[in-house]
Amino acid sequence: MSIWNGKWDYHSQDMFDERTDRALHDQSLFARDGGPLDPDSERVVYIKKIFDWFKGKSYLEVGCGFGRWSDILKDYYTNYTGVDPTKARIEYALKTYETSRAKFQHIGDGWNLYENFDVIFCFAVIQHLTMPDTIALLKCIVKHMHEDTKVILYEGRLGWFTEEEAEELYASEKCSNHMIYKPIGILEMEVPELKWRQINPLTYVLVRS
Image 1 (cartoon, rainbow, N blue to C red):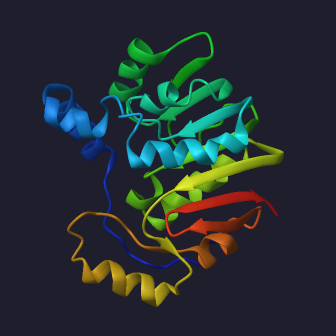
Image 2 (image 1 turned 120 degrees about the horizontal axis):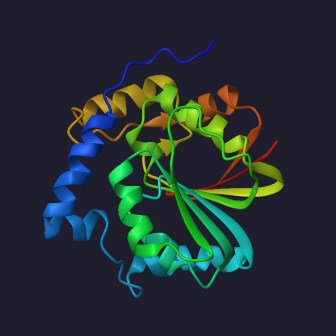
């Protein structure tokens, strides 16, 4: 039984599906959500510096969206798998970015690819989920880890605060952006297979406990 009792608003899958449909028909929205990334942007340069440590590895991106990170990091991995629960995004990724080394797959609840990866990463995914959904996602990630797998999270709204502090932070934003604060201490208790290491306020590396 989960120890988490918080109640949160979040983006439902229907909302993600609706946003995806709008993005595919609105170039300005698509440019932000799924268009090609500027290789010289501050965020891309920063992410590449992190992945300099993990060249020549197998990658799994959880919440790959339209698949653009598979292209940005193509010189870094031996093979890449991107998974996402939104079918339209996966269909776009398959048409746009699929190669002999990069593949994409639609996933549902309790997903399992029955394969382990050297590096697993999530970029701005967990911050949109409820705590129960975050816990479920982390448990699915564990299924795809071998002893030396590194999990890289580039996420906002994670931190070493208490449950009460997380609720206060979330309430203070009046749910305006549906991005949910989560206390890492609770995630550690809920998914004890993972050990958290914070690199900076937005970046975490998780390893097997």
